[in-house]
Length: 176
Image (cartoon, rainbow, N blue to C red; front, top):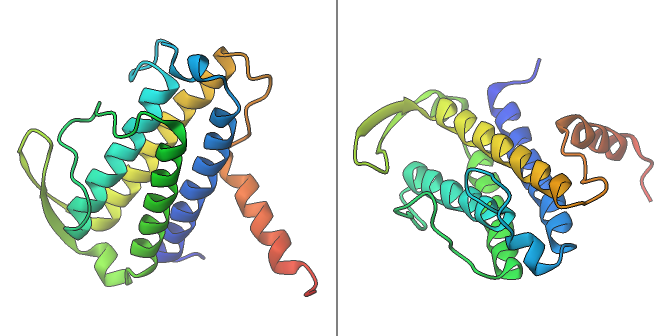
């Protein structure tokens, strides 16, 4: 059976993998389509991808006390997709490194933080990370639907199972 720490490391790797696939599909769009209102909670694909970076930065700031702590969930951090993608890749690496360094005890330990409206909270670190990864999946699903709506014939699959299969193939591949 996989430990909680291993599971969180898998989710952090999945998060980076899925974001990379999603950004590759977004980069193939014309800029007008990328910014077009799509009826999603954060409007466009551009707004949705910015929101995901905002929330990851906010959660990592809460968890580590370092990095940026955006004050609004609808903040547009980057106007250009290339700059947003670079920042996303850096934040995914930061998240993976953070999770990789957590012991089982640190995952179980509670930490204190405040919501964006200033309400004090206390929560086990593993629960906050589970929320972070679930939140990413939720909004990546919206982004995937936006890609479909914009006419991307077949947006990339973001199934965790695909990452797991890729890892299994690499683990059993003969060394070259």
